[in-house]
Image (tube, rainbow, N blue to C red; front, side):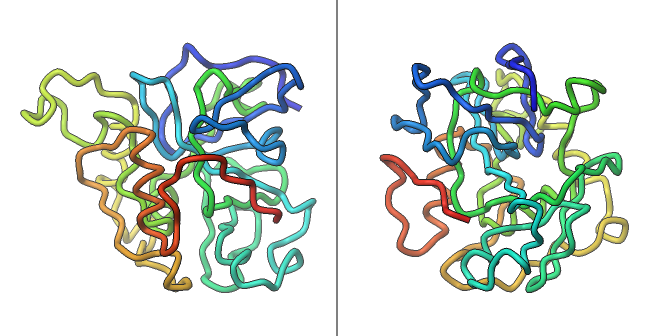
Length: 247
């Protein structure tokens, strides 16, 4: 279990794995103006985008299904389509996707990214991954795996404020650039021949309506939520509580 060390003073980067600890009954936490559902706390998360000005991040929740594989956990198409495995989990039984951590780091148990419900949270609520606390190594998705994740959810380059426009660009001449820029550069520098195709996977049409766009002006954490919501048919405007899927 991770120790109670938060990382409010640190700079988060997109693709990084962090931890959303279980909160006390007397500890209010905001989620787009609503309480964080109990099922969302005490879980690892992967960071989609960051906003250094507002000190917020948009994250996706990770789950282990109690040690079961996705195939064993559910035969419901929606649940299977909304979860992507991270190595050493088996490849996705329907679309063949498998995400990897950078530097060939392996998680100790099967884990799956819940792609259905991005959540906006304050940096102060996050803790470093417990293995990162011990080793000092930053846990994050490999650049090609992060690209696949972004493409799968149909988001608009959630790389953090000011990180998807080249430094000294006339578009943002005074913007402070976070380490998320390094991730984008790495994504561009590493060839698809090395990492494999990032062609759009086959998923139900209602889940993805437009291609991912990586080289655009970076959104804030709030606009990332809105972009993901727009890409899904039948989604609301994103205000109010978003319950954790019972998966």
